[in-house]
Image (cartoon, rainbow over all chains, first blue to last red; front, side):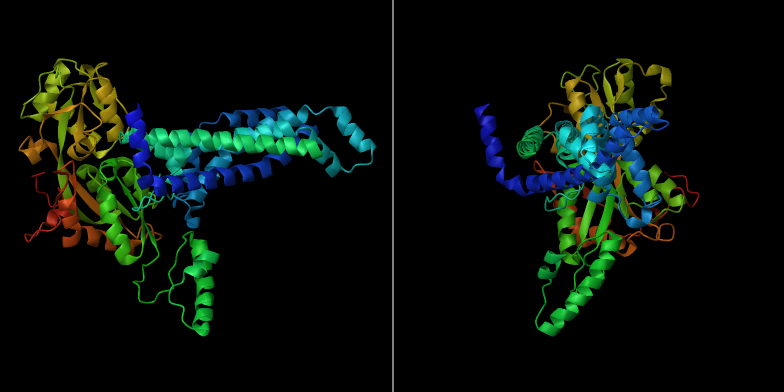
Length: 235
Length: 321
């Protein structure tokens, strides 16, 4: 074991550019996808949560089904869409980080919507009534609800991020797991790199990347939880 | 955007700088639309400079590390980027079919020929070859070690019902494996639980074969590059070591027909094919070794004409496949 650790540390500097660029691509793709999904999902959750309309139950079950949608299927559908034969073919998106953002957006959005919806629905009616009674506009009521449901929404964003950064199926298909000949990642993420390294029998590198992935997720969790607390203190 | 302007190298006077910036904005806008990033302002560079070539290829050329050696000097010479997607022969060809790749490097002549006949592939060249080997656990329960004939070895594996891990992924290696099984004349009913389809790349299959102490068909390159990580041994040699001719493994490369997919980067694809089938490219292939062994044998450079490489093998009615 000590010997193994030694070779890991000794081998590290040579691959630093490789590993750093993979982390950058992973974060760029997953964070962008999660930010975009949040911008779409939270308003949708607020709308579905507040409004009574026909087909609300159906709408909710579609969102909940989307939470468990297999990532390879999403990857396949996005590939057909962005492929040169597909409807977005002229945008030249296939095998780019932007295509990966699209597929992770599709994966993360139902998770963020679903969990936010649960959080928003659990905000008590009398809180909303109070906001109305105090002369709040619809927008104010929405803000109050978001504030009340912030832990739930933070959890939703985290769950979405966890889904995005840890999935391997769709980014492998639409991104192509590309790294340049100098070892700089173009569309290689932590997960697809782990898959590749394991395929080539380089389990040490795969383990390092796996550890980085876990640390990264922990780190982002900590930041979001911290932000949630901060908001609570001043709100 | 910002870093793009700072990087513009030949800025001498303010006038030129302004002109460069305007040209830069125009080309950056064009690049933004086209979805690519770096367009150089240098006029002394070839016209293809700054573009990206998408190469879809097999796991075996990628996992051995050969492509990194080939792509680096090509990228440097033309100022371009090669985006290599390693997928396995079947998927690599499918990416070409939908116009998602510009150039395809694979190793399954039958699939390549079909693709040429459908009009998608043009300017095919023989690139290089290595061979397949039958590897397995050192215990060798089917007693195939030293067998000269691949068909006989496969028959013995089936008869003894020893574990055989198949790629099962429509790759070049899988295609080759199925052709050998065809030669054995065995029927589907003969394939029981001992025959496992992995649906994975070569590296994964070698690992899996090691775990289940079975046999598999591997290209020599991937096996050699993984020889540190596996205990499997070579039981049946291919033609490189004087073994069965049936185990030959030739690689071909071709461009995607720009008349079918007008968005493909045909110029760059041909530049790439030109480079790796040049004396320089073939030298890189020749000199590439893993664990002290040469993995691939260049085949593009020959004084004797070889017309068969450009067309489907059976094209002129000749029956020597």
